[in-house]
Length: 264
Ligand SMILES: Nc1ncnc2c1ncn2[C@@H]1O[C@H](COP(=O)(O)OP(=O)(O)OP(=O)(O)O)[C@@H](O)[C@H]1O
Image 1 (tube, protein in one colour):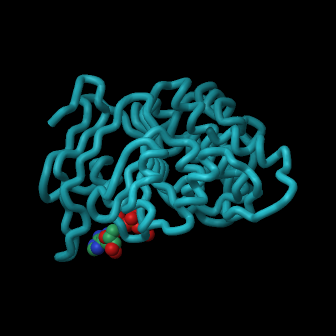
Image 2: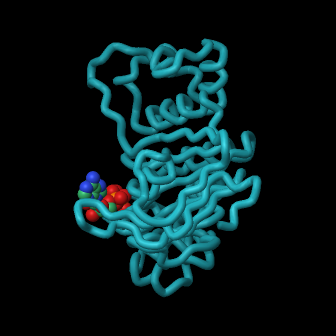
């Protein structure tokens, strides 16, 4: 183990077998305070399984899992099911499952720019607003490590960019570590300190630019890999459709430039 007193979590040679299938093999990874680390990889690569091991929801069957003593982790899951018509305001939702003082709930909403939604009913929120509410609820526990599983799923490109900007601000203001799973290579490359490319084992890892040039990453994501790097370099001669895919255009809008600079 190489953990230092400040390391939040570290896996060393972690492996996992489920239903007789090897899901993860020899995973080494460490996260420090103030760092944004993103896991990328194809469907079924083991990303969620690895998050579950780090969160202590799943026990690895080989290797070692270290968590800093007293570590507080906050988890925003991929999806959360709430009855479509369950009457509940955002302010009330934030007091579940732990009762939190109203002032603290309001402060958390202000931090995420959603104070105006305090009295809104949950089922009326947009996907992006609901993600912010989930994040606000998680931040109420003052986590040292924030873990988000595909937080930008089902949000349009502008909403995703704003969400990543918020995560970056939360990290800067609170100094917590952040571990993300994401499929959006554009945003990953623009908004992450370190990328871990997973496909049962760690194929490659490092700063976005280094990973972008790695043959295993390029083989895994094909043309999308090069497009994401182009955005990372901010050579903008195109804009994006709502899925984030680039669309060629002669006229790059000012808004597009601004969105990208926000995502950095
Ligand atoms: N409880 C389980 N029992 C058996 N197999 C499982 C179990 N949970 C997950 N798996 C399998 O483990 C593999 C990895 O799943 P995991 O959800 O970790 O992948 P992922 O990288 O998060 O995928 P995605 O990008 O599709 O969300 C998959 O093949 C999945 O079917």
